[in-house]
Image (cartoon, rainbow, N blue to C red; front, side, top):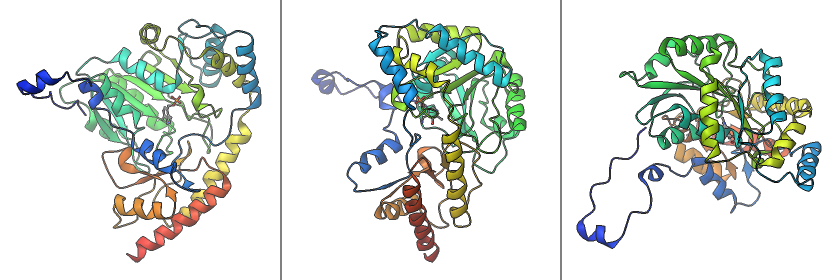
Length: 394
Ligand code: PMP
Protein backbone atom coordinates (compact mmCIF):
# COMPACT_ATOMS: atom_id res chain seq x y z
CA UNK A 1 0.00 0.00 0.00
CA UNK A 2 1.16 3.53 -0.58
CA UNK A 3 -0.31 6.89 0.21
CA UNK A 4 -2.87 8.35 -2.19
CA UNK A 5 -1.23 10.17 -5.09
CA UNK A 6 -0.27 13.78 -4.63
CA UNK A 7 -3.38 15.93 -4.92
CA UNK A 8 -3.45 17.88 -8.15
CA UNK A 9 -2.83 21.58 -7.57
CA UNK A 10 -6.15 23.14 -6.60
CA UNK A 11 -7.71 25.60 -9.00
CA UNK A 12 -6.79 29.18 -8.17
CA UNK A 13 -10.13 30.09 -6.53
CA UNK A 14 -10.06 26.97 -4.32
CA UNK A 15 -6.54 27.79 -3.24
CA UNK A 16 -7.75 31.19 -2.20
CA UNK A 17 -10.89 29.91 -0.51
CA UNK A 18 -9.11 27.84 2.09
CA UNK A 19 -6.19 25.80 3.19
CA UNK A 20 -6.29 22.02 3.17
CA UNK A 21 -6.52 21.08 6.84
CA UNK A 22 -6.03 17.32 6.69
CA UNK A 23 -2.73 15.73 5.65
CA UNK A 24 -2.41 13.19 2.87
CA UNK A 25 -1.09 10.87 5.57
CA UNK A 26 -4.34 11.12 7.50
CA UNK A 27 -6.39 10.78 4.30
CA UNK A 28 -4.79 7.37 3.85
CA UNK A 29 -6.24 6.15 7.17
CA UNK A 30 -9.72 4.71 6.83
CA UNK A 31 -11.96 3.97 9.78
CA UNK A 32 -11.41 0.34 10.85
CA UNK A 33 -13.88 -2.20 9.53
CA UNK A 34 -14.23 -3.50 13.07
CA UNK A 35 -14.98 -0.07 14.47
CA UNK A 36 -17.86 0.25 11.96
CA UNK A 37 -19.42 -2.90 13.38
CA UNK A 38 -18.82 -1.62 16.89
CA UNK A 39 -20.82 1.48 15.97
CA UNK A 40 -23.71 -0.64 14.68
CA UNK A 41 -23.93 -2.63 17.92
CA UNK A 42 -24.86 0.45 19.84
CA UNK A 43 -28.23 0.58 18.11
CA UNK A 44 -28.98 -3.12 18.37
CA UNK A 45 -31.02 -4.73 21.11
CA UNK A 46 -29.29 -7.79 22.62
CA UNK A 47 -26.88 -8.57 19.74
CA UNK A 48 -24.88 -11.78 19.47
CA UNK A 49 -21.56 -10.07 19.42
CA UNK A 50 -18.80 -12.30 18.06
CA UNK A 51 -16.82 -9.37 16.70
CA UNK A 52 -14.99 -8.57 19.93
CA UNK A 53 -11.20 -8.29 20.09
CA UNK A 54 -10.76 -8.41 23.85
CA UNK A 55 -11.13 -11.02 26.56
CA UNK A 56 -14.56 -11.02 28.20
CA UNK A 57 -13.24 -11.26 31.78
CA UNK A 58 -12.48 -8.25 33.97
CA UNK A 59 -9.17 -7.15 35.49
CA UNK A 60 -8.22 -9.35 38.50
CA UNK A 61 -9.05 -7.72 41.85
CA UNK A 62 -5.42 -7.66 43.01
CA UNK A 63 -4.48 -5.70 39.90
CA UNK A 64 -7.29 -3.18 40.42
CA UNK A 65 -6.19 -2.77 44.05
CA UNK A 66 -2.59 -2.16 42.98
CA UNK A 67 -3.69 0.58 40.55
CA UNK A 68 -5.93 2.22 43.17
CA UNK A 69 -3.17 2.06 45.80
CA UNK A 70 -0.69 3.60 43.34
CA UNK A 71 -3.07 6.50 42.69
CA UNK A 72 -3.73 7.00 46.42
CA UNK A 73 0.00 6.86 47.17
CA UNK A 74 0.57 9.72 44.74
CA UNK A 75 2.21 7.65 42.02
CA UNK A 76 0.62 9.94 39.46
CA UNK A 77 3.56 11.76 37.93
CA UNK A 78 5.56 10.97 34.81
CA UNK A 79 7.73 7.92 35.17
CA UNK A 80 11.05 7.53 33.39
CA UNK A 81 10.44 7.14 29.66
CA UNK A 82 11.33 3.45 29.55
CA UNK A 83 9.05 2.58 32.47
CA UNK A 84 9.76 1.81 36.12
CA UNK A 85 12.90 -0.32 36.57
CA UNK A 86 11.14 -3.03 38.66
CA UNK A 87 8.68 -3.68 35.83
CA UNK A 88 11.36 -3.78 33.15
CA UNK A 89 13.44 -6.17 35.27
CA UNK A 90 10.43 -8.38 35.77
CA UNK A 91 9.63 -8.45 32.03
CA UNK A 92 13.21 -9.30 31.05
CA UNK A 93 13.39 -11.89 33.84
CA UNK A 94 10.23 -13.61 32.65
CA UNK A 95 11.45 -13.76 29.05
CA UNK A 96 14.81 -15.11 30.21
CA UNK A 97 13.14 -17.81 32.35
CA UNK A 98 10.61 -18.86 29.75
CA UNK A 99 12.59 -18.69 26.52
CA UNK A 100 16.20 -18.13 27.49
CA UNK A 101 16.05 -14.59 26.14
CA UNK A 102 19.38 -12.85 26.66
CA UNK A 103 18.66 -9.23 25.64
CA UNK A 104 18.96 -6.60 28.35
CA UNK A 105 16.95 -3.73 26.88
CA UNK A 106 13.24 -3.27 27.36
CA UNK A 107 10.73 -0.48 27.09
CA UNK A 108 7.28 -0.26 28.66
CA UNK A 109 4.93 1.02 25.95
CA UNK A 110 1.38 2.33 25.73
CA UNK A 111 -0.05 -0.98 24.64
CA UNK A 112 1.39 -3.17 21.92
CA UNK A 113 -0.14 -0.55 19.62
CA UNK A 114 2.33 1.96 21.06
CA UNK A 115 5.17 -0.54 20.65
CA UNK A 116 4.21 -1.17 17.02
CA UNK A 117 4.11 2.51 16.16
CA UNK A 118 7.42 3.23 17.88
CA UNK A 119 8.99 0.14 16.31
CA UNK A 120 7.91 1.16 12.81
CA UNK A 121 9.09 4.73 13.38
CA UNK A 122 12.41 3.56 14.77
CA UNK A 123 13.14 1.04 12.02
CA UNK A 124 11.66 2.44 8.81
CA UNK A 125 12.32 5.32 6.48
CA UNK A 126 10.11 6.64 3.70
CA UNK A 127 10.11 4.22 0.78
CA UNK A 128 11.22 1.20 2.84
CA UNK A 129 9.24 -1.97 2.39
CA UNK A 130 7.63 -4.26 4.97
CA UNK A 131 6.40 -7.86 4.78
CA UNK A 132 3.11 -8.39 6.60
CA UNK A 133 1.12 -11.58 7.10
CA UNK A 134 -2.09 -11.79 5.09
CA UNK A 135 -4.50 -12.05 6.92
CA UNK A 136 -3.13 -9.32 9.20
CA UNK A 137 -4.15 -7.39 12.30
CA UNK A 138 -5.79 -4.27 10.86
CA UNK A 139 -3.29 -1.88 12.41
CA UNK A 140 -0.20 -3.18 10.55
CA UNK A 141 -0.82 -1.82 7.04
CA UNK A 142 -2.08 1.48 8.45
CA UNK A 143 1.12 1.92 10.46
CA UNK A 144 3.21 1.13 7.38
CA UNK A 145 1.30 3.89 5.57
CA UNK A 146 1.83 6.33 8.43
CA UNK A 147 5.61 5.99 8.17
CA UNK A 148 5.46 6.17 4.34
CA UNK A 149 6.58 2.57 3.91
CA UNK A 150 5.19 0.17 1.30
CA UNK A 151 4.17 -3.33 2.18
CA UNK A 152 3.28 -6.71 0.71
CA UNK A 153 1.40 -9.57 2.30
CA UNK A 154 2.80 -13.08 2.66
CA UNK A 155 0.43 -16.05 2.69
CA UNK A 156 -0.80 -16.86 6.20
CA UNK A 157 -4.26 -18.27 5.64
CA UNK A 158 -5.01 -21.01 8.16
CA UNK A 159 -4.07 -24.49 7.05
CA UNK A 160 -1.33 -23.38 4.64
CA UNK A 161 2.17 -23.98 6.04
CA UNK A 162 4.50 -20.99 5.99
CA UNK A 163 7.27 -21.54 3.45
CA UNK A 164 10.38 -19.70 2.34
CA UNK A 165 8.78 -19.41 -1.11
CA UNK A 166 5.78 -17.57 0.36
CA UNK A 167 8.09 -15.09 2.08
CA UNK A 168 10.25 -14.82 -1.04
CA UNK A 169 7.15 -13.93 -3.09
CA UNK A 170 6.41 -10.98 -0.81
CA UNK A 171 9.95 -9.60 -0.87
CA UNK A 172 10.41 -6.28 -2.64
CA UNK A 173 12.10 -6.98 -6.01
CA UNK A 174 14.09 -3.75 -5.72
CA UNK A 175 15.67 -4.77 -2.43
CA UNK A 176 13.80 -2.24 -0.28
CA UNK A 177 12.46 -4.79 2.26
CA UNK A 178 13.62 -3.96 5.79
CA UNK A 179 11.15 -5.49 8.19
CA UNK A 180 9.22 -8.75 8.48
CA UNK A 181 6.29 -8.82 10.85
CA UNK A 182 5.03 -12.02 12.42
CA UNK A 183 2.05 -12.50 14.71
CA UNK A 184 1.58 -15.78 16.54
CA UNK A 185 -0.96 -16.60 17.86
CA UNK A 186 -2.69 -14.63 15.17
CA UNK A 187 -5.41 -12.09 15.05
CA UNK A 188 -7.60 -12.78 13.00
CA UNK A 189 -7.00 -16.51 12.34
CA UNK A 190 -6.05 -18.04 15.70
CA UNK A 191 -3.20 -19.75 13.92
CA UNK A 192 0.05 -20.43 15.80
CA UNK A 193 3.43 -20.69 14.06
CA UNK A 194 5.34 -23.91 14.68
CA UNK A 195 9.01 -24.05 15.68
CA UNK A 196 9.80 -25.16 12.11
CA UNK A 197 7.94 -22.21 10.63
CA UNK A 198 9.74 -19.82 12.99
CA UNK A 199 13.06 -21.37 11.91
CA UNK A 200 12.12 -20.53 8.31
CA UNK A 201 11.39 -16.95 9.40
CA UNK A 202 14.73 -16.74 11.25
CA UNK A 203 16.76 -18.06 8.32
CA UNK A 204 14.91 -15.85 5.84
CA UNK A 205 15.46 -12.72 7.98
CA UNK A 206 19.18 -13.50 8.24
CA UNK A 207 19.48 -14.15 4.51
CA UNK A 208 17.77 -10.89 3.57
CA UNK A 209 18.98 -8.81 6.53
CA UNK A 210 15.53 -8.00 7.91
CA UNK A 211 14.38 -6.88 11.32
CA UNK A 212 11.71 -9.29 12.59
CA UNK A 213 8.93 -7.69 14.62
CA UNK A 214 7.13 -10.42 16.53
CA UNK A 215 3.74 -9.39 17.93
CA UNK A 216 3.13 -11.94 20.69
CA UNK A 217 0.25 -10.21 22.44
CA UNK A 218 -1.70 -13.50 22.57
CA UNK A 219 1.21 -15.50 24.05
CA UNK A 220 -0.87 -16.72 27.02
CA UNK A 221 -3.81 -17.77 24.84
CA UNK A 222 -2.37 -21.01 23.49
CA UNK A 223 -4.26 -24.25 23.87
CA UNK A 224 -2.24 -27.17 22.50
CA UNK A 225 1.07 -26.89 24.32
CA UNK A 226 3.34 -24.07 25.40
CA UNK A 227 3.67 -20.87 23.38
CA UNK A 228 6.44 -21.08 20.77
CA UNK A 229 8.11 -17.67 20.94
CA UNK A 230 10.24 -16.19 18.18
CA UNK A 231 13.16 -16.17 20.66
CA UNK A 232 15.40 -19.12 19.89
CA UNK A 233 14.32 -19.18 16.23
CA UNK A 234 15.10 -15.65 15.12
CA UNK A 235 18.53 -14.14 15.94
CA UNK A 236 18.18 -11.87 18.95
CA UNK A 237 20.14 -9.09 17.25
CA UNK A 238 17.37 -8.75 14.64
CA UNK A 239 14.31 -9.50 16.78
CA UNK A 240 11.94 -6.90 18.20
CA UNK A 241 9.52 -8.76 20.46
CA UNK A 242 6.30 -7.01 21.48
CA UNK A 243 4.20 -8.27 24.35
CA UNK A 244 1.13 -7.03 26.12
CA UNK A 245 -1.09 -6.88 29.16
CA UNK A 246 -4.38 -5.94 27.43
CA UNK A 247 -5.55 -9.42 26.52
CA UNK A 248 -3.96 -11.53 29.28
CA UNK A 249 -5.25 -9.51 32.22
CA UNK A 250 -8.46 -8.13 30.68
CA UNK A 251 -7.10 -4.58 30.80
CA UNK A 252 -7.16 -3.27 27.20
CA UNK A 253 -8.34 0.15 28.34
CA UNK A 254 -5.31 0.57 30.59
CA UNK A 255 -2.87 0.88 27.68
CA UNK A 256 0.29 -1.00 28.51
CA UNK A 257 2.66 -3.35 26.74
CA UNK A 258 6.37 -3.84 26.34
CA UNK A 259 9.09 -4.11 23.73
CA UNK A 260 12.39 -5.95 23.99
CA UNK A 261 15.00 -6.06 21.27
CA UNK A 262 18.39 -4.97 20.01
CA UNK A 263 19.86 -2.05 21.97
CA UNK A 264 19.88 0.39 19.05
CA UNK A 265 16.21 -0.22 18.17
CA UNK A 266 14.99 -0.03 21.78
CA UNK A 267 17.06 3.08 22.31
CA UNK A 268 15.54 4.71 19.20
CA UNK A 269 12.04 3.73 20.36
CA UNK A 270 12.76 5.17 23.80
CA UNK A 271 13.89 8.47 22.28
CA UNK A 272 10.73 8.69 20.17
CA UNK A 273 8.56 7.72 23.15
CA UNK A 274 10.14 10.57 25.10
CA UNK A 275 8.65 13.07 22.66
CA UNK A 276 5.35 11.31 21.92
CA UNK A 277 3.76 9.02 24.52
CA UNK A 278 6.25 10.19 27.21
CA UNK A 279 5.62 7.05 29.32
CA UNK A 280 2.97 4.38 29.83
CA UNK A 281 0.40 5.38 32.50
CA UNK A 282 2.21 5.45 35.86
CA UNK A 283 -0.38 3.65 38.02
CA UNK A 284 -0.84 1.01 35.32
CA UNK A 285 2.87 0.23 35.44
CA UNK A 286 2.61 -0.65 39.15
CA UNK A 287 -0.59 -2.56 38.47
CA UNK A 288 1.21 -4.44 35.71
CA UNK A 289 3.87 -5.48 38.19
CA UNK A 290 1.12 -6.87 40.44
CA UNK A 291 -0.53 -8.53 37.42
CA UNK A 292 2.61 -10.53 36.74
CA UNK A 293 2.04 -12.30 40.08
CA UNK A 294 -1.54 -13.27 39.20
CA UNK A 295 -2.20 -16.78 37.94
CA UNK A 296 -4.48 -16.51 34.88
CA UNK A 297 -4.47 -20.25 34.12
CA UNK A 298 -8.15 -20.73 35.07
CA UNK A 299 -9.20 -18.05 32.53
CA UNK A 300 -6.97 -19.58 29.86
CA UNK A 301 -8.36 -23.04 30.59
CA UNK A 302 -11.84 -21.58 30.22
CA UNK A 303 -10.85 -20.17 26.80
CA UNK A 304 -9.44 -23.56 25.79
CA UNK A 305 -12.86 -25.07 26.55
CA UNK A 306 -14.61 -22.33 24.60
CA UNK A 307 -12.28 -22.99 21.66
CA UNK A 308 -12.99 -26.72 21.79
CA UNK A 309 -16.75 -26.56 22.07
CA UNK A 310 -17.19 -23.67 19.61
CA UNK A 311 -15.00 -25.45 17.08
CA UNK A 312 -16.66 -28.83 17.58
CA UNK A 313 -20.11 -27.39 16.95
CA UNK A 314 -19.11 -25.45 13.82
CA UNK A 315 -16.73 -27.94 12.20
CA UNK A 316 -18.36 -29.68 9.27
CA UNK A 317 -20.62 -26.68 8.68
CA UNK A 318 -17.83 -24.23 7.86
CA UNK A 319 -14.36 -24.76 6.40
CA UNK A 320 -11.50 -23.98 8.79
CA UNK A 321 -8.78 -25.76 10.73
CA UNK A 322 -8.94 -25.76 14.53
CA UNK A 323 -7.12 -22.62 15.74
CA UNK A 324 -4.29 -23.20 18.21
CA UNK A 325 -4.42 -19.84 19.96
CA UNK A 326 -5.80 -16.31 20.50
CA UNK A 327 -9.62 -16.19 20.63
CA UNK A 328 -10.48 -16.04 16.96
CA UNK A 329 -11.52 -18.39 14.21
CA UNK A 330 -11.38 -17.53 10.52
CA UNK A 331 -13.77 -19.72 8.53
CA UNK A 332 -14.48 -19.51 4.82
CA UNK A 333 -17.75 -18.01 3.71
CA UNK A 334 -20.24 -20.68 2.66
CA UNK A 335 -19.80 -21.69 -1.00
CA UNK A 336 -21.40 -19.15 -3.33
CA UNK A 337 -22.02 -16.57 -0.58
CA UNK A 338 -20.83 -13.01 -1.04
CA UNK A 339 -19.60 -11.12 2.02
CA UNK A 340 -22.42 -8.60 1.62
CA UNK A 341 -25.14 -11.24 1.53
CA UNK A 342 -23.62 -13.20 4.39
CA UNK A 343 -23.12 -10.14 6.59
CA UNK A 344 -26.64 -8.91 5.88
CA UNK A 345 -28.24 -12.26 6.77
CA UNK A 346 -26.04 -12.45 9.87
CA UNK A 347 -27.21 -8.99 10.96
CA UNK A 348 -30.83 -10.05 10.46
CA UNK A 349 -30.07 -12.67 13.11
CA UNK A 350 -28.37 -10.02 15.29
CA UNK A 351 -25.08 -11.80 14.74
CA UNK A 352 -22.05 -9.51 14.59
CA UNK A 353 -18.94 -10.85 12.88
CA UNK A 354 -16.15 -9.18 10.94
CA UNK A 355 -15.71 -9.69 7.17
CA UNK A 356 -12.34 -11.13 6.18
CA UNK A 357 -11.58 -8.21 3.90
CA UNK A 358 -11.00 -6.08 7.02
CA UNK A 359 -7.86 -8.21 7.50
CA UNK A 360 -6.84 -9.21 4.03
CA UNK A 361 -6.50 -8.43 0.35
CA UNK A 362 -8.94 -11.33 -0.15
CA UNK A 363 -12.63 -11.33 0.61
CA UNK A 364 -13.37 -15.00 1.16
CA UNK A 365 -13.49 -15.53 4.94
CA UNK A 366 -14.88 -13.98 8.12
CA UNK A 367 -13.63 -13.59 11.68
CA UNK A 368 -15.41 -14.98 14.70
CA UNK A 369 -14.32 -14.20 18.23
CA UNK A 370 -15.09 -16.62 21.04
CA UNK A 371 -14.20 -14.06 23.72
CA UNK A 372 -17.79 -14.09 24.93
CA UNK A 373 -19.97 -15.70 27.59
CA UNK A 374 -21.23 -19.27 27.13
CA UNK A 375 -24.74 -17.93 26.59
CA UNK A 376 -23.65 -15.61 23.76
CA UNK A 377 -21.58 -18.39 22.20
CA UNK A 378 -24.58 -20.77 22.28
CA UNK A 379 -26.74 -18.20 20.51
CA UNK A 380 -23.87 -17.55 18.10
CA UNK A 381 -23.58 -21.23 17.20
CA UNK A 382 -27.34 -21.44 16.59
CA UNK A 383 -27.23 -18.41 14.28
CA UNK A 384 -24.16 -19.67 12.43
CA UNK A 385 -25.65 -23.13 11.88
CA UNK A 386 -28.89 -21.58 10.61
CA UNK A 387 -26.89 -19.36 8.25
CA UNK A 388 -24.87 -22.31 6.94
CA UNK A 389 -28.12 -24.11 6.19
CA UNK A 390 -29.70 -21.08 4.50
CA UNK A 391 -26.72 -20.65 2.18
CA UNK A 392 -26.52 -24.39 1.46
CA UNK A 393 -30.10 -24.19 0.23
CA UNK A 394 -29.07 -21.28 -2.05
N1 PMP B 1 -1.61 -6.79 18.16
C1 PMP B 1 -2.64 -7.59 17.93
C2 PMP B 1 -2.44 -8.80 17.08
C3 PMP B 1 -3.90 -7.30 18.47
O1 PMP B 1 -4.93 -8.11 18.21
C4 PMP B 1 -4.05 -6.13 19.26
C5 PMP B 1 -5.39 -5.75 19.86
N2 PMP B 1 -6.51 -6.07 19.17
C6 PMP B 1 -2.94 -5.33 19.46
C7 PMP B 1 -1.73 -5.68 18.92
C8 PMP B 1 -3.01 -4.05 20.26
O2 PMP B 1 -3.11 -4.29 21.61
P1 PMP B 1 -2.87 -3.22 22.75
O3 PMP B 1 -4.15 -3.11 23.51
O4 PMP B 1 -1.77 -3.80 23.61
O5 PMP B 1 -2.46 -1.95 22.12
